[in-house]
Length: 193
Image (tube, rainbow, N blue to C red; front, side, top):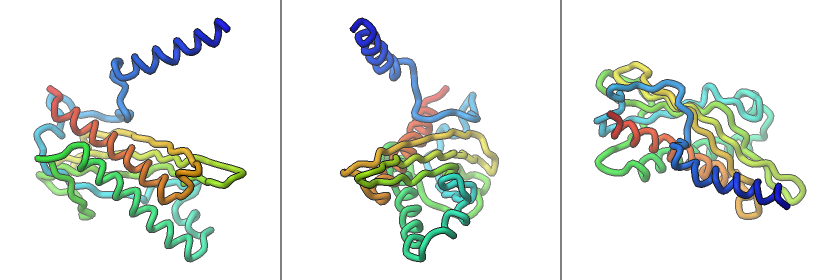
């Protein structure tokens, strides 16, 4: 009985201290400072990179080769949905006067670009017998004047359940988490000294 109480106290303390301790929804890999290269920029371009992704441990080509024509088409839709959710979360969380516009051309001088580089994805499974959550790991590369200045890793996990049975539900939910993490980093950079 004492052990259970202690476990509850540890859980409660970590829940209370987590936000106070500055826990961020991302992991910083590289950060520009004094001042941040992101600071003061209002117009950001966004591009999505699927070339590095591993899907259930396979390259995208290997993953897609195992699918039917219908499943391949469905995967294209899922990619669009997660990328759209990331972009929308960035826009919603940061808000005016900042803008986020998709651009697939190479970054140019005078531009701040965030490249959303998907690294690992498990789309997840739902059945009444077996469930596997959707998991997404994404690297976000912030490029200023053609040079990578900041890099963060963000991850999301969405449980498979009766209410989230479809990939088309879980993948955008994961995208929203990734987009919020990117927005959090961008906002912090705007206020960094």
